[in-house]
Length: 240
Length: 240
Image 1 (cartoon, each protein chain N blue to C red):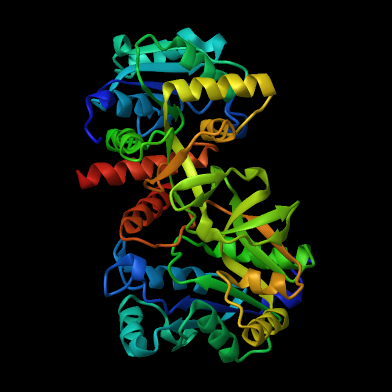
Image 2 (cartoon, rainbow over the protein chains, first blue to last red):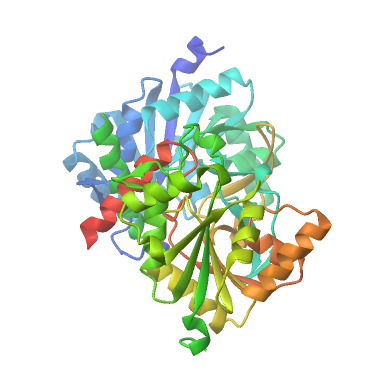
């Protein structure tokens, strides 16, 4: 199924609506500079560079739509290739708003965190192809945990689970559009909040698989992560 | 208890005896170059720079002792400040060999992976001070998982555990010497193999705590990690 015509039209929902509390800076992490370009602009660039993506929706804080539009335009983002919409109060609500804003009759949607600027067009493409080749409802990029995991109460270790069975997962998370919409609707009905979209699909009975991606696809969470991201981007440019 | 005289004499056991199967290169990851210096030499440098450490034991593959000694000497490691010994068949056995080789009457030992060259003297020191301030048997450096965790069977996600309770842990792992020795002895008796030293102490009833450290303290596992480490080191040098 890889390379099927069905995969050639995919929507992307990029969520950038958080308050970035852990980041500390009131300006937020999405517009913070990573090697001279806002984090979110770098993220969007990877999606516009991916030929399989034909519609990109970016959900931002409702009060900051024009500010984000201005910053992205100044950074050279092709504004006619994206739609900036108002996000919701939670990440989950922002994704739901994004799903509702999709215009095309796409079969597949890729959900991604705006604060993961190290993502590449190649990784997005691999995730999209994987949902076809694995014939499943969703594919989540991540990697098996390289480090030992500990279950912790306060600061005390209470268990060391078998790390070989645990994956650390990121975004992009790619789904059949209908399946993801149904999962979001069910979560609303049940009042369920998940930390990612896959958990919504999983609890709704969906078949979600993992796909191994690079560990450096980190989510900018604290300001120190920006130096980390810059280092990765610089290292990537050196290799080109 | 921080700053107690008892903390001023600490042994370090650095394990570098693995075959590095996942690394692929027959030369192994320990002597691979990270920004012009072997990974293991960078790791050792952080320990020699830590004033609290007064004895450093480096466990390497039994067939490669002289090769490692030569490479470390060429890299400017002060060879009179370290003892290179033969590691065992497993990481756990290598740590046990290191514990047996400690000469001084230290109360505390820091165990560290040779392949974590991003460690700093400051991080080692903080872990040593924490074992005093927390009055526990061991302290493990790590961080709460930033990303969602998934329990995976083959490539299929079967559960999304509550990530807020999970830490991703690294080394250094710092212990009371007597407690760690007893835990290793108990593991031998029971035929138990753990992925880290803390798990041995935990199962033997020890009180092990976590201490938050930087996420970039990664273990070089695959060759691509070297570029990642170089980027981090370069970014750190830029900040100095």
